[in-house]
Length: 211
Length: 291
View (cartoon, rainbow over the protein chains, first blue to last red):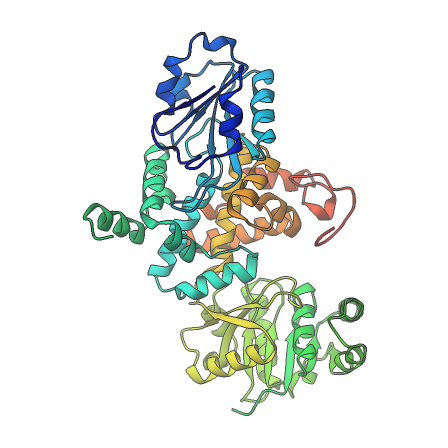
């Protein structure tokens, strides 16, 4: 079962997973920015092996509560305007059953996606790690620690990262980084998530129609 | 300032030995200083092994091994550093220890000689203050393993002259390295970004958000990084991560740089990473890069 509610950041284009979901009798895939709202439209949800709800930065519990055994959250990691990666963060809760987890994992694996399992926290894994890193890099750029080119070159040569943080954010969208970072700041209240100045500027310019 | 012809390296641990190899490989006469003859001999054996493997892999001509080793002299006598045009220090990360080394070097090296420190966390200006030649002092932070990694973070201290920095920069390029200029700040670029990032990954494990393998997979597949943060920490060692945290947090008070309690518990349990066969992962054997 596939239910689409609004634009999906995880699947903005056709994908084998969507095809597989359409014909699947025991897996429900709910995608789109209002995916969680579609949960109410599923008849007898308890009969499904697994229901997968696409998440933004919010917790799965916002849609499913804390005690659902067969409802999981997911997001295919995507940085700003870049195309989605093949990495899916699969969100489970304490009440998630082993059989539902296995069914969800097998369903995603079969579509060629790579799964990283995590608990139900805002930002899951990657955003929890990269948003503070991006904010720190942007702040150090403002402080004149090094040029943008040298900051990027350092992490590429020193760590083998494919792209440095500044070039990566400029390519994928500083305003999007602001949105995610601000959401995590609201969730955790930790200064590391406070959007860096350049991200705030990018967001404001976007709101003013300048970019 | 005359062209640099003779390079000194103070300290022949992993980092010092690697820097000496880079200098000698590039054609500089290289003098390696250490207080321990055993450490010097071990470093020479390791360098010879590295060079032989480079020949086997077609990255170095066979005749070059003899030339490079012939250009490298090791000594336990500080007086033997007198001919050096530049000395790169790679000793223990302790300000008093570095000051003591530079004070001795200052007494024997010519006034034209540049001094450089490979410190990864200490202040270049503070080290330079005890060197006797603050205007001729630069930061040159190489990456491990130095013979394979091109990056060198170069930082001027507050009193470093432009002339000295430019000369050191040209020397770095002449060694075939790729310098990047950073300000004299704790952790420079690499460690300032990496240490807190790695701590954040450790905290995800500590708080039960995800297993190490899931975190590493997410980072590798989602961001295209060659190695996940927890596998990387296992490679460099949990004890090294602790030292980096203490140095960085002690100077910045950045909460993200504070060492997560899990690291201390793992160290207490002997889980130092690859070198003890257990870190965030279990290892069947003590293997280094690509093992």
